[in-house]
Length: 430
Image (tube, rainbow, N blue to C red; front, side, top):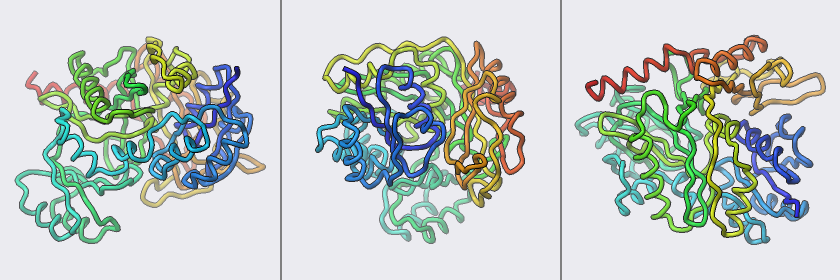
């Protein structure tokens, strides 16, 4: 039987999922608030709707006779879209609303880790009174990560001693729109992401990826949803060793065991420091941009993972091409603080050369594709080495021009990768 798969979401991550599924024997439908031109060309049908309206998503799934669903973004998970799809008999590869709290509620996340003795949990405290939070910041002996408890699109966290001063952090908790905060010890090191397919009590991990949150080259500027990322031709990154990777896998597996019944993708963001990896946060879905590093080198049929999960079978072992990847996002000028929309996107699949192009948030008009106020598109180079992949990605971006667009050209470059290696070596006294 040919499966009918519904993809929920319309960003760059979802374009990567759609492209991966297009190589499988399935009929693909999608729904999102924005019409992603890359997904619309792949899908058999595309419905424009608010994906947090879970009844509308379930109705669309029924209308196309979906036999499976894949959930891309976190907001529909937080709204309970998996629960709604299950109510109409559609298996969705993603956690139900209660399990998605591992991402959507940072207080729950840390208390869950502490309760179940999950390794890698930092020192933390939770607050629902801004004045109490401000007092804790003032009195804490060291620096802190200040995290609103809910979803912030990757842009709500502030770190003292790095992004802001303690006085600015106190002002932030008092005057921001958020009401509840988790205050954590500041973790020092190099961040990396480990994503895992999870179902039926089994875990299948993918190669590590390093995202670049800062807006500007040299890791300067405000945090963003992610300006780009890279992976190596082996499971670990150049600044990691095999033991670091295995420890991150162990933390993911311990978390899945404690969650009991979790399904979908579990994404662990780690900080690798002198004492090994510690948990920055968990997410309940693929990363964006990390999905664009992982899925292009996945040689196992993604549909086989989905059907095994649904049919309560053992998940297939994951095979990955021994290739490195470099992903670079093009974003509108002023992103993320004051983004300017309306610039014409000149790159397309043909002009991207050897690179893969993934559309994210763009405005498709009759005369072309234009930027919105969010990340526009990403190009991904795939090569034998990180240097090869970076060159492919950079060549593709050169075709696009930069009028109205901004790019972090340093992602994946030899100098920046070496800087990461040196940083971890310094922390470890090597």
